[in-house]
Length: 304
Picture 1: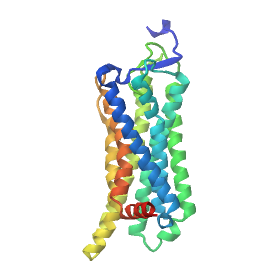
Picture 2 (picture 1 turned 60 degrees about the horizontal axis):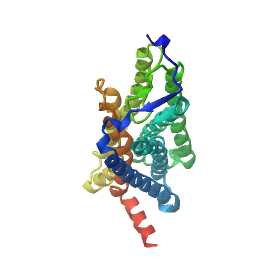
Picture 3 (picture 1 turned 180 degrees about the vertical axis):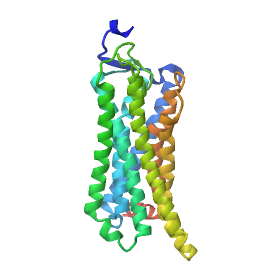
Picture 4 (picture 1 turned 45 degrees about the vertical axis):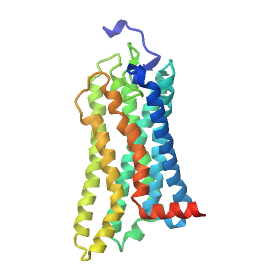
């Protein structure tokens, strides 16, 4: 049936247009949430840059995560805000491919950096004597670079698989950004195989990083429980609390995308809000409010 249809040169986002009465309200809500997200991430990057007390591996990784999450939100939210007020919600096929590539790549980078942060906590608590020699500045830089390379390698693979073939009508993408499940359905050929392959790749990456983090915390827990003093156990746990909270939120919301059954029309739009808008907003708040060093650094900067 699709052989006689016109090949598409652009897509049109359905997004929140199915809720016309709420678009201005949603714009205001998402706009202020986005401003707070940018402020929080930029504050963390600035503090880890100017405060020499935060020039440690843990905060280097935190600064890298904040930078990655800032880029992650830039890939999706500005276009979503424009489309909430604009009548023309179109995007070229090439633009859609770029948006998907950056969204998936930066999302994968975030997952790997969170995994590296778990590894850092494992080495600091379970191997304290070897930690300074293992987690050097050079090693930290190599781990962050590996996170970006790994994230975009997976992203380029998935994006290439999806955009390898042409797309046929209708041109409507039932989402507010180029989500791979929504776009792959518009392929001129049978999209079921491609959808299964890219989903398996994404689920494997998501579960692989999550299981690695879980394994590191199993070893961390067993080590901390051997500490004789309650104060020592509390101090060790406090260094992991904010990271563990963000991991649960990040992977919990991300799993909604791949581990849920096929949603009905319109459901995917709001189901994407937690991992595209809410998670980047909560991460800097958790890392700042639940971290004593970050709060002290912020107070010192404000006083000066």
